[in-house]
Length: 189
Image 1: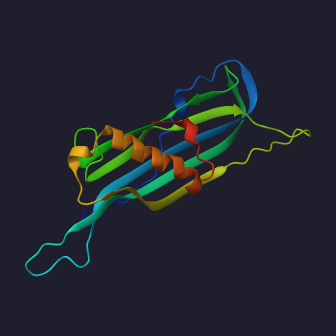
Image 2: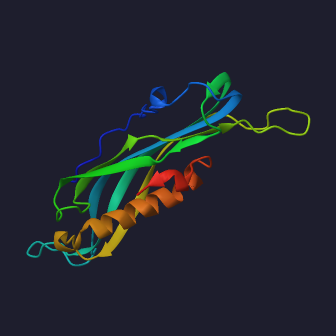
Image 3: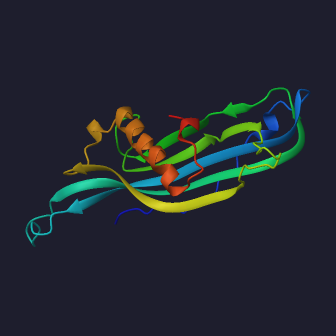
């Protein structure tokens, strides 16, 4: 039986309380935070015509079934003072292989977490009449993506950190299709 990833819950880890808020510019600020989390499980696909009572099924291919949740929160903060005109902090992701695979690889079961939420702050944008034109809101999307498709059975000896980075990059690069406000350049892979 194939293990099923556990349900994901939204991550709330903006670290906004650690930012410098003394002196400097004051006014209305646009603030963007984002997180991404995923559970992965390796799934085998079998040749439909090769199994019988005396022969085990042949694995035709395998892939990572990736259950993800992405959250982007954009707000306007009125009347705050900051010591600089803008600030950003890259989103840091960490992956933990929970079973199988070589050291640093994806394994057969794993978890991707945001260890530091992506964050940027800048003065709110206004039109020529002084009206704020930045849009705000929360985008939270859950779904399933199929990643790291490979022919044949899973081979842990070729599942390395190079594979890991490529698969995570593939997920991150496609995240704006899921939640348009997600900022790929803010992610430190």
